[in-house]
Amino acid sequence: QVQLQESSPGLVKPSETLSLTCTVSGGSISGYYWSWIRQPAGKGLEWIGRISTSENTNYNPSLKSRVTMSVDTSKNQFSLNVNSVTAADTAVYYCARERDYGSGRGLDHWGQGTLVTVSS
Amino acid sequence: DIQMTQSPSSLSASVGDRVTITCRASQTISSYLNWYQQRPGKAPNLLIYAASTLQSGVPSRFSGSGSGTDFTLTISSLQPEDFASYFCQQGYSTPRTFGGGTEVEIK
Image 1 (tube, rainbow over the protein chains, first blue to last red):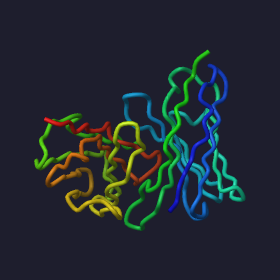
Image 2 (image 1 turned 45 degrees about the horizontal axis):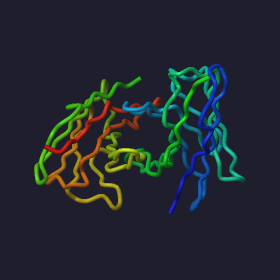
Image 3 (image 1 turned 45 degrees about the vertical axis):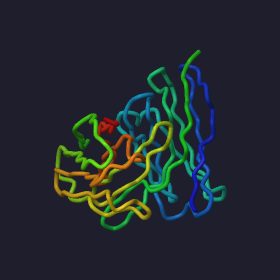
Image 4 (image 1 turned 90 degrees about the horizontal axis):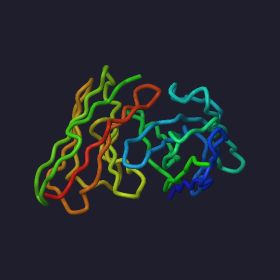
């Protein structure tokens, strides 16, 4: 069974860079798009972006200038960097696998989520 | 970006009730519509993809319908474990976008 696990940076200071890594176990990272989604406390889900194992990326325009994603197939990991963070970036961050079913595309496996707090 | 509008934002229902949640896209998304369930403190869980296909392991009391811009999630007989939040999401184009969510509460 495929499992995803986010690293836990916990607290990040304003203006600094938030860095997260998602480790995939129980299956190959190849052949899928890998996504990041965040959720502020008590609010809805925001898609941050995705990366394929051939390093094709799509980012949300609302965050595009501050976001970078990378993938390391040798370690079965993919990563997210968000620079110049503010309190508005405080949220639970999830990594997830996007599966292309042919007739649809859905996020079929998720990490448990990690809370990132931006505060001095 | 494609905007996803979900309604209602919350509802109260009893065990055994039939529950319907709707989702509308700001432009056509064919059948590239997914539904997720999220219990408090947990990650979302994919229930339905391609508007009407049940993800493996999801109970048959869940069903989805629609295409184009208007979609529906139906729970035929609400069970205690179904009290949760539900989100729609379009997989038609990037950026992927989610509906605002529907919280299903116990009446």
